[in-house]
Length: 122
Image 1 (spheres, rainbow, N blue to C red):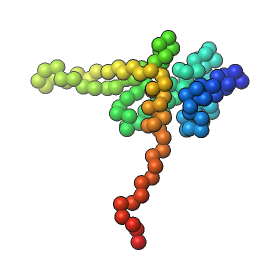
Image 2 (cartoon, rainbow, N blue to C red; image 1 turned 180 degrees about the vertical axis):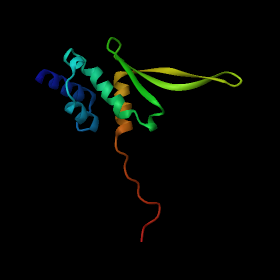
Image 3 (tube, rainbow, N blue to C red; image 1 turned 90 degrees about the horizontal axis):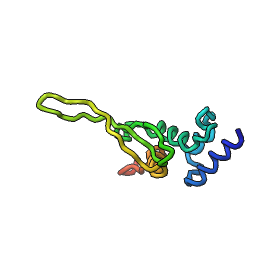
C-alpha cells in the first residue's frame, strides 16, 4: 500500500500538481486492483476525466488510457448529416498525450477567480 502511495506522490510531483484539487483527490482515492498492478497513470487519467467531465468540457467523456503510448482517449458524441433528413449519432475519438490531458483537466477543474463587479456597489 505504501508503494502505491509513493508512486502516486511521485507522479503528482512529476506533473507539478502538488496542492491542486486533482492531486488531493488522487491521493485520497482508494487503491483498486488496476492500480495495484501498476496502473498509477491510468488511475490518475480516469480520475481527471471524471473531474473534467463537465458541460464546459464540450461534451467530452473519458474513454481509456493507452499505457504503451502514454495517451488518453476521449470520446465526444456528434451527429453527422448523411442526407436530407437523415442524421446519424456517432462517437468521435480524440487522443491526447497523457501530460497534456492532465494539464487540460486541471485547468478545467481549477476554481475561477472571482471578478470584481463592473460598477461599485453602494
